[in-house]
Amino acid sequence: MLIDSHCHLDRLDLGDRPSSLAGVIDACRSSGIVRLLCVGIDLESYPAMRQLVDPYPEIDVAVGVHPNAEEMAEPSLSRLVELAQDPRVVAIGETGLDYYRLPGEPGGQQRRFRVQIAAARACNKPVIVHTRQAQTDTIRILKEEGADAVGGVLHCFTEDWEMARAGLDLGFYLSFSGILTFRNADNLRAVARRVPADRLLIETDAPYLAPVPHRGKPNTPLYLTYVAACLAELRGLRLGELAEQTAENYRRLFHRLV
Image (cartoon, rainbow, N blue to C red; front, side, top):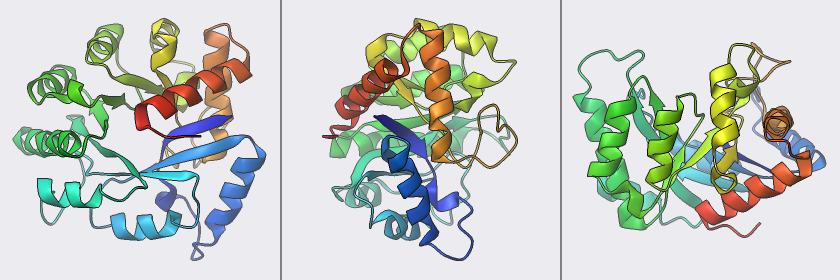
């Protein structure tokens, strides 16, 4: 029983036929992937994404605006809370800070981040956090905005143990992606060994960051098995044990019965 806690199904290469997603979902079912969380990155594309996944009850949804998304208008608290009333929406995000390709001063990203944490608190749903080269500001803003009241996940975690510890202290979960399988990810694997069992999640971030042996190719939720196998080996677990633990963690964080 595997759960992909973060993917972007609307960005898979489905050609001109949205019905092609049915083949992906059928293959996931056959591979033991029982639930997926499709995460929004902007409000302009969100309605089409929500419509795309509507026929598949095993797909949960998150609504939010990525720090690098170029929006015509910034997301408002009221709009995010309105969209989050949809029972399929289990979280706000992805949001956060990304200073890697920051085109200017970080104030705009930080304001956007604060609004989305406020929305998560207003609708009592967890927040999905993207952070890259912004450790100090990410943790500071999470604390200042009271994100510990709702919790959430530091998704596609790639940072050090200090950052992991700070997130865990706020009640957050850590989600590991295909990056865990990369040859140069020894430091990340060391962090993954230390995370408490009840705070672990796994994800693909598909169509990005395909794991070894598919690195450099388009990712798919079907490759979640590589992430799970790698993490299970690191922690000395059978694959089934790791799958059940991460599924239980998903259920607890996102208040889902799976």
